[in-house]
Length: 268
Image (cartoon, rainbow, N blue to C red; front, side, top):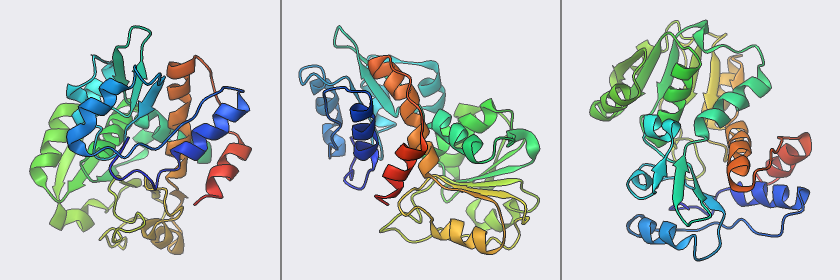
């Protein structure tokens, strides 16, 4: 469920897994206007859904709708996955943090969050999951940059940990000495302008990551590649967050195989 949602590659991802595991069913994109989210979620049991994923702009609003919220979603303040129980109750969790960490480790198995300062751009639902992930992975310094300082300060307060809020005008200074840069905004996504960020102050050995996966290589990642920075694309986060979702919906452990990755990459 999202608004918009037709750009999502989640249907292709889950249709692949349904076929691979011999399950009779379908994963469909549901374009739900923000004011209709509660009605849509409450309809899931009657429509025999096992659950659903949530994307922009529904992740935070769902917190006030579902019946049960786990510790991860509560800490993050956003829900990415809803499971329908046998009794029709809706349970919410957030698998984005797991998907992001696993996506990075798939590319760089030796990556550590405590290797140095981490700069996170954005303070929306995606950022909440990323900051939570970095804190959970042992980051010692997180520099949170957002156009609206109040929103960033609220995130820092809610998540806790070693988070320092940086004004948007000082975003260049925040890059100095950083070991990692993560874009959690939609800037750079197809149809949106690129992220307004000059990478000149960023060390050339800093890892640069983007949670946007359409296009596969955003303008930010292209700029990082040109200057020699190691990079991580956003697709890994999408692929790996499906693993706990399937465990919750069907009790099945799925893997991110080369065939699955190639199938989704072919749609980008």
